[in-house]
Length: 389
Image (cartoon, rainbow, N blue to C red):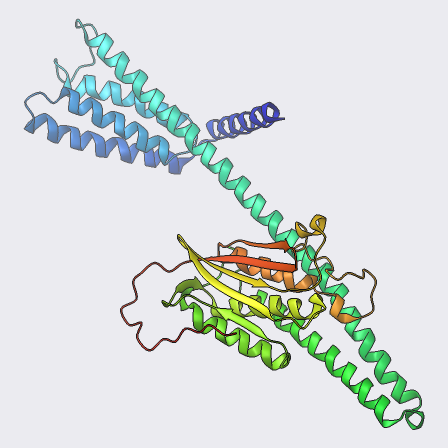
């Protein structure tokens, strides 16, 4: 398989070089001519100022061969430059001046050596440039494939997660519309509570989708700035507690202020998503632990719950947009969370970080990293850290 890939790459490079060799470009010709003129003018300067300029001039034209090959397409222009450069050295800078004469003893070896070196330099530069263009093309294709995979995952997750709460809202509201007199007050409260829960779930998904729009479509990156981790964590936890006032969260951050490169709104969304999932899917009221630590050049975030565990064979695909709940076909909208974790991974990838789910004896732990902002803070006074129990 490796040999086939290697042969395929060599074939692609060869085809690209042949195509470029056949196609004449006036622009490339002008570039080659410009490099030649510049090298010749500098050579005349060396010829007047240096006592033995021959070696300097030869090296100068050799560098010109590299430049000509670097900024033109194909072998032709670099080889053309090499021939013209050798003739120019003989004509302008070798005795008898103003004549082309390769008959003098020793000159043949010198000029042939210069010609070979110039041609090899030109060919090497051209091949290297072709390889770089091929690698750049492959990287672009991989990026496009990754984007397409992300879109497919999001569409699949959205179609699954939105359909379920909408079905619940329609079903609950329809039960009152069909026979309002037969529904007692207690049942109405239960139905309205269900509608409220489903509507909040839909709102959460809309916020997730809106967060993706902050990621640049062309580069798949975000605009990052140095942010104090404590403040981002505090904001996310406060928002989570508004949604689940009865859920305890134990937050532990370093004593010294820590800064990370991030888009704070997106990282808050990641924290809220994982906290929501820990609350909804753990099946327990045990406290959730949110920890922050520093590891070399990264800031590590961990959210650990103590409830239901995830099968190990599903941990690797948990961020692909699939359903996480233990009941595959449950009508409960809280079972659908693929879009949340899929977007979490998209956001962390856009930050040049990593994210993974880890199974432990008493539940599940989600861990993600962000690049640490390494500049020393000069004004760290007045920034509070917290360690909540």
